[in-house]
Length: 242
Image (tube, rainbow, N blue to C red):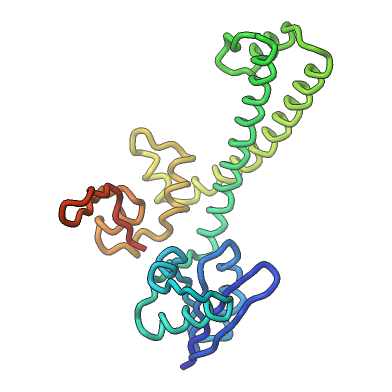
């Protein structure tokens, strides 16, 4: 069997062939590359980039060396693998990420409008939602220069456009929630709504891959840990399992 290490870039990849296993360092396009390569080899392995750097730190670094290190680590049994989600889980992750991105963009637009008001000594909006009906009515009553008024109106139009996109994505996510018994069970837990349940499902994938509850807790980074050697300072962090 061959082992092939791939150091992937946006437009090219360096490859080092050992046996019939392809090893890829986790990047933004690693799963897409794995899907293309998988039908032609025995196995595709995605490696944790953080752990690979810790294990294989080298003074001389090139793309070819990186690819070779990946292959050698796997052949030696020292490669920290990353779980590759199936396509439905990847699709859910993309939708959850898109929703989060839109929510952040809308929050940023609100902050920009608030900063415009602040720069003209206008106090904070007395209503809970600056971009709601009452907030906009109050906003129209504030006196600002004409160019600032145009900027505010432009930000509000962008806020509304993003709101339309958000509604489309949330309808799609709602359908996913209704079709998934696991997500519906999560929603019965107090404090977990549809959005949180779907985000958990997207992060975890098939929960049966965790043979112990402790491994799931570790995967989510919820288990505290303390590491200390001799009289040195203690490090407080979390254990991780992949």
